[in-house]
Image (cartoon, rainbow, N blue to C red; front, side, top):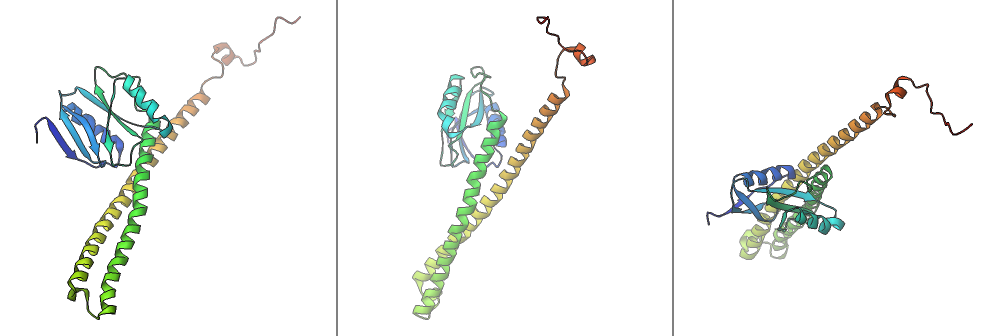
Length: 234
């Protein structure tokens, strides 16, 4: 592999940690070029700390508009494929060219976690169904020879090979199922933490607003008995 190119395989349950990883690579002099399957990162060599990376989650209806805004602010959109995360924008740009107008707010962070949770939740539902189908097929491949010929699959090369293949596939998909379920749990836990933090911020703002005086006039604050008088009336 060329010294100017680098490929790494990483998997993240928290997109904030993924973002920290990408910016650490930027700091070391590697620019993200593309992302595949949600875990295969391809980089090209640059100067250390030349680039900065941002991951932004947006509503589907506003995705193109947000991408255009990011482009005007100096960011380049990085392609990512086969990851089920098309509502995520992977953006990178040179430190001295990007505008601080475009940044990752708390709403975007929460949307990103929800997108990630949805992906793993769907996988944790679909994969068990595939496992059940493979288990049923393996059982049939074992029973059919016994019923039809009275022989075990091991005595019939074709049935033995098919049984071995389906058993191996069942094991693989069971591992994937456990991985997807564990990932969904971790992402959900992180999402709940983010929502709790956002609620705490709102509560603090509401409390600060209630604690502040209704009128900025200190005289009114000290002497609430004073009232405004309409001098236009006689």
